[in-house]
Image (cartoon, rainbow, N blue to C red; front, side, top):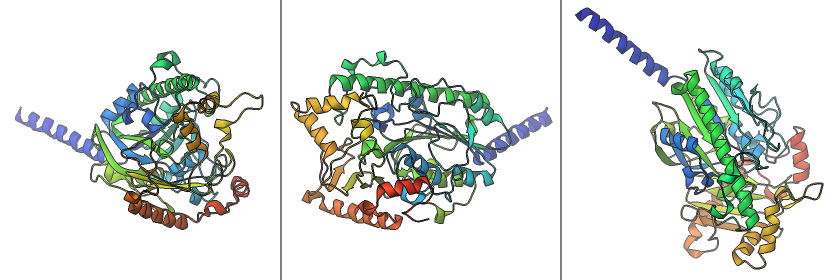
Amino acid sequence: MRSLCRLLAAVVLFGLVVSTVHAAGRPNVLVIMADDCTHNDLPAYGGQNARTPNIDQLVRQGLTFNRAYLGEAMCQPCRAELYTGQYAIRNGCAWNHSASRPTVKSLPHYLEPLGYRVGIAGKVHVKPPKAFPFEKVPGFDANCVRNPTRPHELDAVRTFMQKDPEQPFCLVVALVEPHVPWVMGDASQYPPEKIKLPPNIADTPRTRRDFGRYLAEITYMDGQVGEILQTLEETGKADETLVLFTSEQGSQFPGCKWTNWDTGLHTALIARWPGRIPAGERTDAIVQYADLVPTLIEAAGGTVPADQLDGESFLPVLLGQTQTHRQYAYGLHNNIPEGPAYPIRSITDGRYRYIRNLTPDEIYIEKHLMGSRGDGSLNNPYWSTWVRDSWENPHIYMLVKRYMSRPAEQLYLTAEDPYEMTDLAGDPAHAEVQARLSAELDRWMKEQGDPGAAQDTQEAIQAARQGQHLYGRE
């Protein structure tokens, strides 16, 4: 009997050792990405309206980043940054519907040599294929403007996860909600009169109705997150998988997407890795989309090619070894091809955000938000109600003016003013902060080879589409 007990103890000990070694080994990676979801419309970041039980559960299971940012609040540039580890000017995709440099490397180039299968499901929206050779995984709609979104299914995702038990996988599931048109989910669950609008959103009846539809899409997106995570559980691979959820850029309301305000560039980031990442905790470490590639390379046991990347690995933050990462996160916007050129550059240290508008004498026009379709119907009918009601409502007038007419410099104490409604630029009490951030922004622009307002954006975007990039450094 004593020998049997020793044998059983040895078996248990061996199992624990194997389990520990496996947990400490290379993880599978599952990245779930929303589309045009303002981070603080999620309850995880203080949102008071949307219901997101699956994302809320992920928060309880993982580590939530309070200060995660992307470099450009446009779909294609931010995704190119996420997948390449390079900022927009360097990787070449500094405009929507353009392209990265053909010589750029992305997640498949870095992880496949380390033994990973690297796939993407849903919205791709990066090119050229040579720079982004993901394995395409069907099952989720790739078209963010379809009305309605095509039904999704998890069979292909499940097959990809289970394809080879001995080979780790990296899978990006890029959802198309809550990108416009807001047609998915049950908007009746969000009665317009009960919605609490953020202070940067004008309170008009049409805006309330559309905001309710947007919230319904957030809940629909959350349901997809739950289905994807359930599929991972069913494969038996959840305990050995690093899950990352991110909300991408801000929503298609004025002052969010296509801007350098915090509601455009700040993104949700929640990480879960059972046994490795502490559960139910938050961190103020500043991270940026460019940091994902080096983080995954390090987690996979590879050597990070620092000379090829702008980002740095935040794996020590994930593992609870440190509470700090980078000192600054950077942002830009050129507006082409969404409207007339309007170059903006910005920087945040997590507490303050400094924004520089390079052509402040021009007005800001965004055709998708402010314009009409070929049949004369409005892209976003709520905008016209903002303009209409601004004649009688001082707050709405301020929001319209703030959006269309911007000073050369803006400074916000974002940590205490999350919707950045109070501009502190020029305030003597904040002069040191403004000077520090301005100088660092100058340094970053020079490092990136950023021509700022001097670039011929029409010529540059056409060159980018053809793979003949004019600006930045290789």
